[in-house]
Image (cartoon, rainbow, N blue to C red):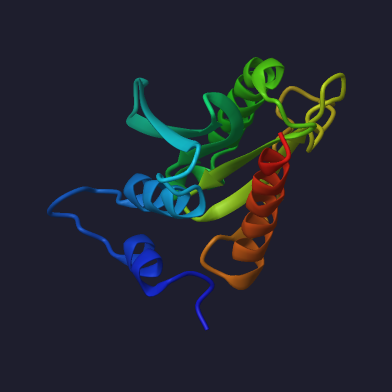
Length: 180
């Protein structure tokens, strides 16, 4: 049995190259608006960021979920093929840590949860006020050390383990928001 409704699964699995080269942002938008319905105090705010370097153009989409206009969840989406690049993982991790630190003072929950996604591969982040952001960075021993290992993205959203982990985080957030 699929971990999501057929409409959501189809949105993630359908490739429409004649319309868009990557339908992932639209699929995540649909998923987050399903998990945080629009007829509730939640608002899903997507932002697309483009970065150009000398070799290629990359895009990143950040979804911030607000409850009554305060941030309660963050999902940062990157293109799946870049997961194998150490520099892409490091840049994604740096962005997550910066964004989480910026949002934490405004989050009314005891823990700010965030997800970094490369396609449907997920890495989960948490931070509590006054504590380090988890997962902790690997210590840098040499100039070419991988401080952001690929195994942080250890589950797939379209498989049971990834769907269960994401749903657990979302349910925890929603329960905490109900008690505010």
